[in-house]
Image 1 (cartoon, one colour):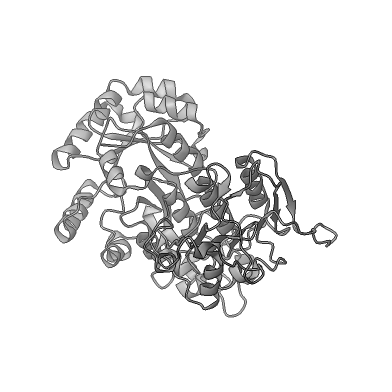
Image 2 (cartoon, one colour):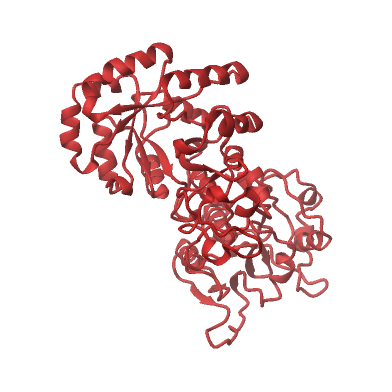
Length: 508
């Protein structure tokens, strides 16, 4: 599932030796038996010494059984872990039948838990067994290894621990709650922001245990086929990225929504004083950043308006995060968004009135090669849309999708408008503008028979997120789909993505 470097070692002692030498690298799959480290080990060698054993002592080669075996295991976690990671430890216990004790390595009085021979240890850095494995771990790196009778999990961040637990629970080797003693995994994730922008597969999401995304939901060609299928599955646009788990309009929230399988992500574009397109919903900085703490200090502007700040000055600010999240989220650029989303998903650019396609947007599309990433705004004139589409087709050979508006009060004009667009372009996405979702039955009745006729050839987009009165629940999405709405915008990315995965098949 991960497109990152994972290696399976045949002997934990050799794994630690390689680690201490600073040459631990990965291959494409933990199942890869051609890895040089495992290639040289025979079954006889696997019975020899392990770390902590006396010289010449033979160590059992029997698998370790963590669920209902001869020994009762304890899951030990670092007492500084978040509630989410502690909950993941409980989920690991449930996977093992629920019979294990889950406990912190230290209580609130500072008293250290007495060690046991049979433990699953998660990040308890006071334990000497963890120290060799935790060396040199980057932000999103993790390791899972066995030493003696213990299973050890270490990571560079709490997101790394969550993904390590998911890796373990979902592995075939661990399906029955036992592991061979040679089991060891190393995930080489991103060490910093630049790395996960360059390769989003190295970014680890915090919701990983909640939703195992089907492969087809990550396929850009499936998305493109679905966009042009008026009878296809429900599709999603995520409002300002995954703003439930990360700050709105953050690159992390965009990567998260993309890794959930979002078909489209709506982002707000504004332009800095020196002409750099960045993401920000409001024209001011005081609502979503730490502007209050930094304005007028260390040479930064006092103005709360984004347009009065250069890009370098904006980079000194941090996006507001949820309580307990101490990660520093930067204001992202449109260039970064295009780099991340290119040939992975699509985006819808909002705040049309404050940016210019020719000077602010298209040069970045050319630079990044994100030719079909932006679905053209409905606020462009039809002539401008066709000019853009023609230019991109000539330069890249790719077709570009576009939105167009169907105003509810002019429903009688929908069919003619749709036909005029389809004569020049074989597909487009209609936005049913301004109806109140709370009165959907009434509006749908008023829009017939025009709604059904438009739906014969086009996707129908509808504003269903909280801002427009939507409840964002399956019953609501089911009803919309029955009326012909098959493309919805949502604030709660995880909910709509799980709904699509559970109820629809991929486009052919």
